[in-house]
Length: 305
Ligand code: DHB
Image (cartoon, rainbow, N blue to C red):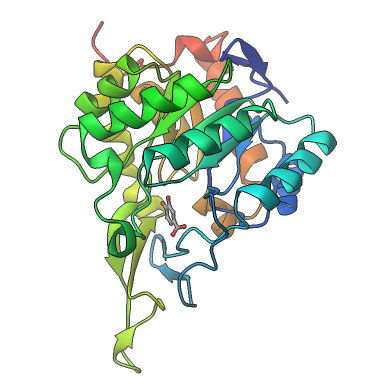
């Protein structure tokens, strides 16, 4: 069952995608392909390989997860080989996600990965778990978001660039606008909410190896919907809406807030890989019942015209 949508000059079979970081290893993203996603985003890659933060890196709370993976990944050289193999085997459009702190590392990652011709490159400007190491996240400020997006665009050749933003700001509209002005082809929001902690009351210690982690799951959905709504008021470029979506009603809400594509991540752990097909069926049925012939007619429907 398809709900086609056009983005970046391409037609996707549906607006649902796997967000970055739900799967760690590159080859294992084939699970999302099998589940029928319209597109998928790989775990963020850095220039050098990273072991990640101490285990446990993920823990459950009542309505989702906190995680502190610490950008565990094989690094640019090895990742490029693995991604090339993955792309040769899959017809599902793939977005490559990159993380750096220094501008020239971002430029290098974007330059190298654009050679693989992915659907787009996502700039992770908003990982919440490495600020002890690297300092404040780039997406906290409009000027740093502008600068990195602009430099990345220069290296991306004709590959679309997506700036992924953090919910931990009270001016996400302004930051999204800065990315748009820098040439971003889309923005993605939200990254995990920074930062949560779960304490093991028997051990009297935080559960995660790193203590705190980014919060995801249904508990953050109202934040995500509000941030996407705010971005939609500020920019014309498409929005990839992510954060706590686990039912078709959630997905419709996110589309009405202004998202063109809908990321479903934590819900995979809660409900299994069928969640994509179930949500697609629900959206399709809703569209039929309400006489909406194309999904694009629903995008931003919650805004006053
Ligand atoms: C990590 C990165 C993220 O962007 C995020 O939202 C959560 C975790 C990480 O690798 O630690």
